[in-house]
Amino acid sequence: MTRVVLHLRQHAGWHAGREERGTIAPLVVMSALLLLAVLAFAVDQGIACAVKVRQENALDAARDACMAPSFALVAKNEGNPGHVVACRFVQVLREEGVEGSVSVWFYEAPREDVPPSRRIWGIGVQVQEASPTIFSQGFGIASLPVASKRVVVAEPFADEVTWRPDIDSGNGRYEWDAAGTVEAPTFFGFVELSEFPDEVQDAVSTAVSAVTSGQKRKERA
Image (cartoon, rainbow, N blue to C red):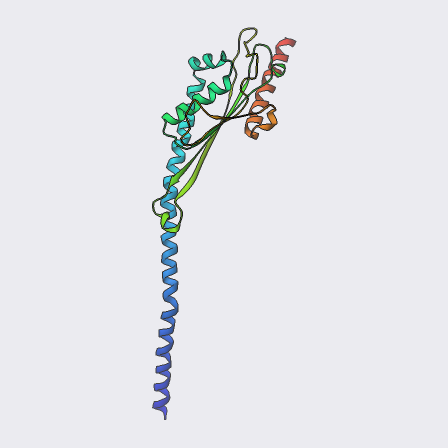
């Protein structure tokens, strides 16, 4: 009798071990797939980070080109500086390899807000691209969105009274899609500073405050 009981216990243990292995197998497969997904996203995220760096460098190059004295003098004397500045930004961005959509906001502070010798421009630029994936495509993700932006303040000035265009300076948002011609953006005119992104509002308000405070100190002296 003892031998029979021992045999039955060993036989039951053998079945239990086989069931445990059957339960673990799907977990191993799921873990392998999860690890593969993590590695895929890590590689594609690294590619997207490289796109981000390229965007940042391109925005720096475009900013420097627009702030260069030779171009700033031309833009300062244009009847529509907003359009000229926005197109220059996009021209340089395209030359630097940015192929996605671009939005440029341009705002000039009203003449009554600044001294006669000063002008203040607030410029916001945002680029957006889709970074194609390599490994993540197997998980249904064809691309990763990558975006970068810059806010720039320019202050054209003269010794006494700086020239201004008789009409609106081109305040608003200029937009290009990935295939848009540099000289032909879609334009949305804005009037109030409150219509612009917060970063542009803050930059312009700070610049206006600094200029007016300096003018008051000069007058008191």
